[in-house]
Amino acid sequence: MAVSSARGMRDFLPRDKEHRDHVLGIIAATYHRHGFESIETPAVEESTTLHSGLGGDNEKLSFHIMKRGLTTEDMQGASSVEELSDLGLRFDLTVPLARFYASNHASLPPVFRSFHTGPVWRAERPQKGRYRQFVQADIDTLGEASSLAEVEILLATADVLKRLGVDGWRFRINDRRLLTEVLTAAGVQESEHPVAMIVIDKLDKIGAPAVLTELAERLSPGFSGDVLARMLEGSDVGFDAESIATLMGDTDTSRQVASELVEWVSKVSTLTDPGVVVFDPTLVRGMGYYTSSIFEISHPELGSSLGGGGRYDGMISRFLGQSVPAVGMSLGCERLLEVVPEVAVEHFEKVALAYDPEAPSSHLVAIKMHLVSTGHQVRLVPQSRNMRAVYERLAADGFQRVGDVGPDTQSAEAITWRDLE
Image (cartoon, rainbow, N blue to C red; front, side, top):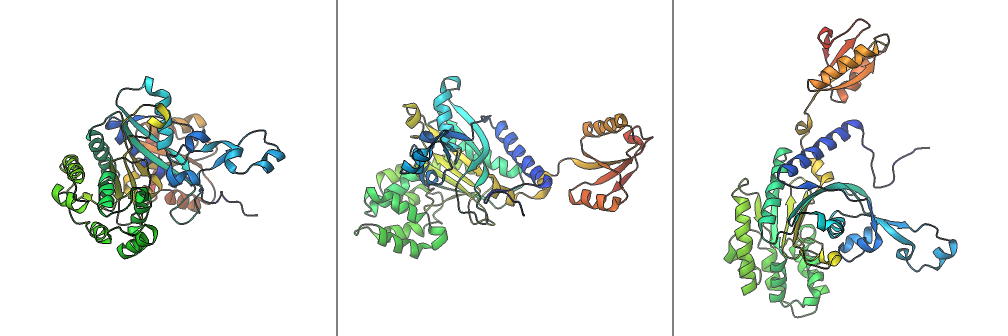
């Protein structure tokens, strides 16, 4: 009988795991250099936390953990799965962070820069590029109301991508307040703004004509399709405050927000490569908790973003009872790993020691420790009759050299090396 991992979840062989660990190590080291401090939260949260209305559609994809001690009668009498569970697996890292901050804010600085990474779980329909367990790496700044938070987060993330050797990416940037203004100017009823944003968010998948058709089908009559058509086609407006304001409603509020947006984005643009920061009037971000700035990282080789985030000033108050400004960026590590060049993770020379079973273990481990201390990654392999197969496996695993350790070999200097590449 064939045995495999659960659907939508994966095993990783040593070479793949090494690649993942090194990429995650670069992410962590870079964010730490930019002043973000590591935290850890449990994989499991209270159901009331996960289903507090902050997770949007992801709440519907959460894995429930059944209460202990349930009887058959309890299960038969329940009208929903929510009645049978009191815990669940986290579906993102933002909701746990909000709960973490509410629980621990007295021990944290007034402005707290968080680095938070780990697996999350969603009951997705498994398909290419979409898994039920995947890793996210988030940075968030809590307690900073000014746009300094956005600037720091984008510059730190740009540094991560540079250190990983990723090329061709861009920051797409918008502001939820501008979307609200253009929808209002188009005559869309306020109660229908969430529906309109969901439809606009499909632009990359279905195109502008289909978006306008669906808006006409789902919204009340009377809105201006012309206003929204101009917005859908205005991706080349650039970071000019007057042009952005005109495109996004042409109101006093849109002019003020556009001015704020251009002001803080210019700080990012001057410290990153030309052309990596673009204004996208159609960028929505599906989560309803965003209150102003929103951003995504696009890449030409992927049909979905490498990561994204924005400002969510109202979320933590749901747990803490007081307003705390917050901005965050989440990197999707599975997608990021698809575009990180392999050369970026080859950092140690990988060597193997093929040892004779008669070689004293004290000599063998002393030689290994010497090689480790001088910057090598070392694997011990016993000598066998079919060394060709051993060499082929070592080469496939990325090892560059192999040296024989015999009964009389006492030091690394006495080893004769064989190149495997």
